[in-house]
Length: 621
Image (cartoon, rainbow, N blue to C red; front, top):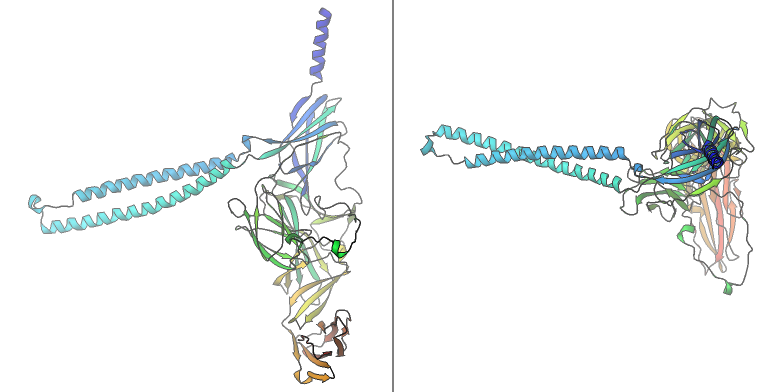
């Protein structure tokens, strides 16, 4: 019996010696890599631990955390046994501070209302006394006519003053009731808001001696991203183009990124990462073919400006700072204080991706220029457990890293890191990004890019001449598709889309219409005639194009026009004069490229003839 007791005591001591210790670890965000959609958060923290197992718990993390992206690393003296993630919903998730403040305001409004009501009651008593003593009996009191007149004047003044004060009090009480109603509405919204879930991470570690455990945690969040923006400035046609590369960073994760190392990546963890595969193309006859109607989501509206409003589907309230992105592009914007937005669309844009914290994201087809988008509140959360050692995990992006030095550029705020499939801009200074959904504009790089300038015009469609800057070898500047503000001679001239996604080795940027280059296209009626030859009709068209350069230096201009292209043998088109222009036989587009001396004019002539059967009709300009 004594031996058994001794064994039990030793077993109890051994068990408690090796029992796992549960500790809560406070971590800080040290580095954030922001993608075009989403961001990777890096946290770190350390604590002293004893020999054996220790269960380390991280609490109060963003509910936006994607558990599938969770990575945990530890120093070499510690081994990670398991990593588990869960959401914790508790009453403490209410914003008690805001609720207490609103309750205090509501109480003060009620107090002010009580005081006004008390004053109004005093005035009522005063008016009542005046009414009761309003019948003056001169025969009883011996009041003289002069005394009676003075009493009436005093009565009138007191009566008017009391009623005017009651009128003011009535307006004040109405205003207080409106403020109370608005404050009560805000209180009810907070009280009725579903409890906010917070992420918690439990890391089970083990060590064979007392040491300091250093943990590095990283995870992906969805409600964050950055939008590339540009300021493009040109002083004159003898100077290079200055491109200021900016990033508008936003996040609504519930965590403040305070004094963190910030990197901006062109990659996105939520886009397709695998190459597509073609399926067997089975062809049959028309009679056996089933056609599928193409819905609005598969129809591209086209290039242009789209405006709209984002609201709550239940109460119609506008959603402020909701993110609106063009699907498949890095172009995006945010809604204003009224929930309104406007966005410039690239060619072929077909849908918008709209997201807002606490709401289900939507992909909306672009079917018209004025859109109304309604989001539904609520998001589905799930739990996951990750088991296994992570202390040898590699960084999220580690392959093919190469640093580029920009020796010719001015002092920059970022270091460019070119990965195998993406580019990162690493800001040199620590940055703070609040979790308020507002865009924080950060300067990334400033380039001075040599440019060749020329003018382009298509006078058939537009009599304006547009200044074009042509950039060569633009690939080395790591430009990403984005909206650009244009400045010429320090004057804002409008917006455009910088599109480096094309396959050309040159990039053209339109700097707007120049009023000092005049263009005119007229039809010379005296040279246009209609003749009949047998069963055919022949129409000859003649045009004169005139250009004037009002500048004090020569300019180069490219002119585009067109002649019709016949699609069958019935209609025959013959070009008779192009003034040296080059015609594309397939499209009928004609191009002239020439220079105009200072304060000089130049003329071009274009003529063509169309022959077709007399019994038919053709439509010409």
